[in-house]
Structures are given as structure tokens and as C-alpha cells.
Length: 546
Image: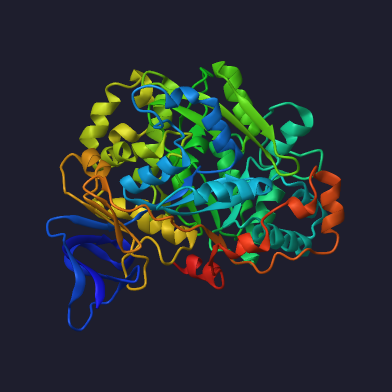
């Protein structure tokens, strides 16, 4: 007999073209299945009058690894007071519980240095309920830069295949390509554009970006190169973003936290910025192989943590806040610093508006919902943004409390579009799952993981999305009207690229740059065997076709 039938819920499953249809949903052995001939199940859940969606998918967050732990250590004040543990960077267990409490059942950490893969996997294993994985940092990896300089694509592919298998990653992340290495080599945070020369290797970010995007396609990874562009947060940086898009050529790519890379400068040089979202949306209109996640800003205190070490140092200098930075040997760096987004700051007001413009102007099927947690704000504030997207009146009331010059810097006040529940389901579920190549996530068709959330309809959208009636993970009710029923472990997934076999010359090159031996780098075979592999065969073509 079938395990569970969810009776009569109003389904929003855009991946399967279901938009507000009241129907039954059948679940067996942790999967969505077709209705059985006898229409019987061991358990019935009455969802009549409720909204049913797939579990949420966060395609860009920060869950684990050295910078996340550094952020927790740097902010002990966040775990003191009225609500201990609910800071901008929650503990591992609380992260899983709070994601599930919002109806999110899958999350991808966007940047882990491979050197710290074992630590990251231990933390992910300690993050309950949600399924998760991570992207491996590669754009300032010395072995990668050597291969790009030498034009040795076979060597590059060989190294990337070995690296991903060794560290148990799901895909690759480029952060300020070349810019981090330039800062480490020179000690200066100068602006690095796409065609700037990185003297230590004699190459440009354009070469790095183009070669890595093409390599991800050659390896047929489920998710394309995921990139944090150069010159984050700088006025006029939309031109750097546009040049990066050009550098991708015909390859697939994903632009991370694009809100931070969409600013026009000001001719009066007043230190603030204006929105350049319409220009970038127009540029992307005919580039269907490129997707974005937004990285929207929420007002208040949070923590900036990034693989962009020079950015972290810059924020420390301009804010005077405490700061942590690390050089991850041959792999990159990171920076951590407390920040606060203020309502009356013109710069912060523009950042808030730019994020909303991306959601409202961009094709939702190519858009992932994110705050770049915790950089733009913590993920547990997602319901606030959903309420803003679903009501122009809520947006306009909010704008009244922001900097009065905001109207001169963006188009948001004139945008009347309001998200429907179906569009919410696209950007928070169907689109990120599709762009990640997770074919069993983000939808409720037969064969999908039985991860879903049931909401009580409410005109107060923030309240509606803050308090799901039920959350179901793998066919099991984990949350019932705010009460935790079960706390399953969740799964850590990785891309399948073949065996992590040592290749000729690797050991010699490794010994030149690392302070540890090759034997202590990456995961042991037994540890890799415990990962749930996502088969990549044909996924690149499938993602391109959709």
C-alpha cells in the first residue's frame, strides 16, 4: 500500500505546468508516485484549502567551511541575549532546522576551499533535515592558473576532475577571478577588470573565466561555472559584469549574487551608486545559458563572509569593524566582517532596490532566490522579501522610509509587477533546481523526492511563508504546525566525475605549493563513498535544452 496521500491540496508545481490546481498527491518510499489503482494509502493528510509546493531550493548560501566557522567565532555577541543562537550565521543544527522551518529542503554552499573539504563535509553532516552540497573554489588555484597560462586544456580538465572527486564537491566556483591572487601577490586592493593582467601568472580574468566555464561544460557537470564577478560593490561595476558575460563565450554560466554587481556610477562622484539592472537584463535576454541568483539585501545587522579576501579587507577599512582574513594556501582566501545595512543610507537603499529589480525584471526561470546568506542578510528573512515581491503596495510603503533620493537612482518605484504564487514557486524551487541540474528536486512529478511544504493561505504573505502548516522531507512529516516531529540527517550530494586517481606530476606540483602532504588532502575513499552522487552524464545538454 502507498505510504501517504495528501488530499486535495492546491498545488503549485511550475516545472510540471501545475498552477493552483486542487488535486491529490501520492508518496511512497520517499518519492512522489503516480496514483495507485485502488487509490488507497496507509496515511491520509487533508490539505484541502492549503497551498502545496515542492520544498524550497537555495542555490547560493554559506553553510560550512572555514569562513562560516570564522564568522561564528567572530560574532559571539549574536549568541547572547534574548534569542541565543539566532544570529546572522546560525549553528549547524539551527541552520538545518530554520531552513526546514521555512519550507526549504535543499541548500548549496557556494564556496568551499578544497583544502577544507573534510571540515565542510563534517559540518554539512551535522546540518539536519536538508539535503546539501558545496561548490569548490578554483579561480585562484595555482594549478588552475598554470594550466590556463599554458593553454593546456587536457591538463586543466584532468586536474579539475581529480579535484572535484577528491573533495566531494558538486561543482565549481570562481570568486573575483585573478583579483584575489593579485591582492595576495601585491598587497594592494586595486580594481581588477576582466582584461587586467595578473602579473604573477601573465593572464587575465577573461582567460580564467572563459577557460573555466568551458571546462565545466566539457566535464558535463550538472551545474555550470558559478561566478562571483570582479569588482563587487563598486560603482560602475555593471560594465565588468557585462564584460564577464562576454567572456563566457558559448559556455553555460551562472552569475552569483548579481545584485552586488549591477551598479552604475554617478557623474558627480558622490560615493553612491545607481541601478544598472535594466541594461544587464537586456543583455541577458538572448543568453539563455546564463542564469543568476540575486543576493538581495535586507536591512539590519549581518555578517559579510566571502572568498573575496580583498573585499573583506576593504569592508573592514571603511567600517572600522573587527575583521578576520585567511589565505588558503594555493587555493584562494577569505574575509569576514560584521556589517549593517541602514534604511536611510542612500547606498544601502539602492542595493535593496537593485535586488528587487532583478526579481521583477528578469525571467524567473533563470533566477534563483537568495540573500547570498548571510552577506545580504540571513536566509531566515526570506519571507520579508517574498512579501515585497508579491505586493507593490508593500514595496511602496517600505520605500517611504528609505533615502529620499532613491527615486533618482532606480526604476523600482515605477514597477507595478506583483509575483503570483506560481512565480514564487519558480524562483524558490523550480528554477534553482533546474539550474543546479537536480532533476529530482523542485517539482512534484512522479519520481521526484517527496520534499514539499504545505502553507495556510494568508493575505499577509510574510506571515504565510514564515509559518508553514506542514513540512515533509523524503515523505516524512518533519514539521507539524511549528512542532518538530522528526529530525532526519538529510543527504550530502556530489557530482560524479570519475575516480579520484592521482595523475602524473600531481604529487610533485602539490609538494611545491602546499604545507601538507597529498595524503592528507581531500577525502578518503571511504568518505567519498558515503556521498550521494548526482550523475552528470547528459546533464549539460539537458540543462541547455530547458
